[in-house]
Length: 106
Image (cartoon, one colour):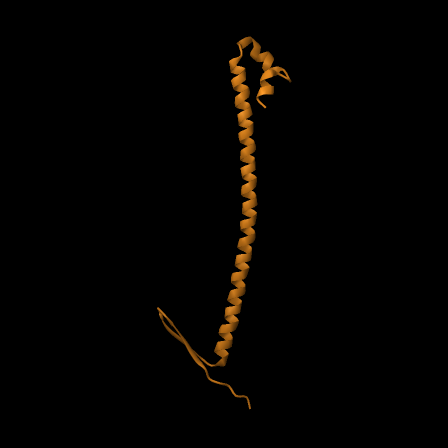
C-alpha cells in the first residue's frame, strides 16, 4: 500500500492567499522553481557576456578617440607653425618631406 500524506500549505500575498494541498502540488512547485532558477541563470549568463562584449567595444572606441585627438593636435601644431612663417616660406616648408614644421608637430 502506498501511503500518501495530504499536506496543506499556503502563501499570503497582498492580492490574496494561495493554498496548496497534496504531495503532487509540492513537487510541481519544486520543479517550477528549478526551471525558473535555470531561466534566470541563463539570462544572467547572457547579460554577463553581453556586458563584457560591450565593455570591449567601449575600450576600442576610447582608443580611437585618443588616436584622433593625437592626430588633431599634430595638425594644429603644424598649422600654427606654418602660420608663423612668412608667406614665401610656407609653400616650401609645407611641401618639403623633412621640414621644420613637420618635425616639431610630431
